[in-house]
Each structure stands twice: as structure tokens, then as C-alpha cells.
Image 1 (cartoon, rainbow, N blue to C red):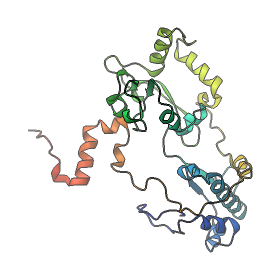
Image 2 (tube, rainbow, N blue to C red):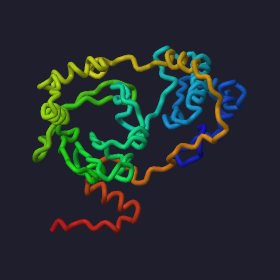
Image 3 (cartoon, rainbow, N blue to C red):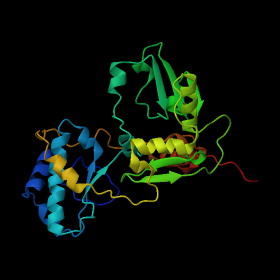
Image 4 (cartoon, rainbow, N blue to C red):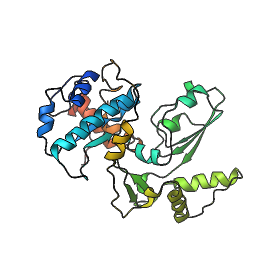
Length: 297
């Protein structure tokens, strides 16, 4: 591992946290290159936060070179994924497929009068970032962080309560179906947006889920190929892309912005609303005796 030394709950070889280590491995001069040369199924995992550094392109170029060298020395087949990017957010790949440009800097620099939060519960934007007269609309479920700061709440359906399309970290589309009925006035997300568009006088051109998915296919065809095991190995393209990088590695150590996750199993709206998960976390942090279980008698 190259980066800050942390407890990964398993044994590993720590090579350091400097970009010089990456340079040496890419150049084939680091002692660890001998280990890589013996690997039969090499896998290089790059954390997405490193790509957000000022020298992200240079880091990507160095890691791509390492992966390419490992591929050649191991002789693995073309389908084997040597280079992999580990994303921090489950929906990040799908958002990129739809053309989303990450970051909330634009909102902070130019605070809007109206802010629409679509299932946004990460707390990236707070009232402190906005003018006092900003109007916040929240669409989501479980009354989480985004709902607390909203002026209007549009109750949406959780993933178990709607038909949905999700993308895994390899970029492959997966389909879910309704398991339980949404409570109260909650509706599927697309129906809420469709109703808003009609009230705003810019009616969206779809009335059924099939029509929504046809539009989804126009935007990103791979998002509706549910039954196909699509090619998800873009090693050659990534290698060519890295060659265009024209920057140098910085001396700053490779330390991610977040080293630990407090309450790892309560990082989403559903688990945060779970009494069972709250008891489990309390038991771990304060001891099992701290959790009062009701009597079954």
C-alpha cells in the first residue's frame, strides 16, 4: 500500500506515503517491483480521492504505468482488470454516466435563491452556505439531514419501495423492483419530478416508467442494458488517457481527506433511522450493557 498507514484490519506491506514511491515503482527501481513481477493476477486499486488532488492527473499516469507493467510481466488475459478505481460514494459512477459534474463549489460561490435537494443527505451544503432568504426543497425519505434544513419536504420512496436502476462500481446497470408499498403520501421520484414540471409549465415528456427509461437510454444507453454483462475493462483507454497528463507529482504526502469513518454502519439515511443499528453502534462504542433491551415477558 502507498499512502497513509492505517489499520485496515488485515496485514499489508506499507511502502510509504510519498509520491516518490509511485515514481520509483513506475520506473521499476523500487524493491517492491520484484513482488509485482511475480504476481500472477495483479490488481492495482486507486482511491478516487487521490484523483482530486492538484496532481491527480500525474498520479493517474504513474499508477497507469504501474498497472501496465504488471499486466505485461504477469501475462494475464485482456479481460483481467489490473487497474481499478475505488469510489467513495455508491452512486458516483451512475452520476458520472448521466453527466453530473461533482462538487458543490458552484453553489457555495453563487448561492441560489432556490435549492432543490434530491436525496442529498451528506451535509455538503448547510444553511450557513446560503442566504437567509434561500428556499430549500427536499425530496427524499427517512427525514434525514437534507429534510431537517428544508422549507418544503416532498416525500419520496426508498429503494425497497420503487422500481429503480442502480449502477455498481464497475459501471454495470442493475434493476430493482418494488418490495413494499411506500408509506403515506410518498411517491416514486420520477413521479414527483413529473408533477413539478407540469406545475411549472414545462411538462416532462413521459407519463410511464417505460417512457422514463426510454429517455434514460437516450442520455446513457448503458443504464438500461439490465440483462447484458457489458465490458467494464477500459484499461487501454485509461492508459492512453494517462499519456495526455502534462503535470508533475507534488511533494505533498498521499494522505486522504478522511482516515476513519465514525459509525461506519450508519452512513446512509436508512441505517441512521434504524433503531436496531443505533443499538448496535451504542453497544460497540459504550459496551453491550449500555443497550437496554425490552423484556419479552
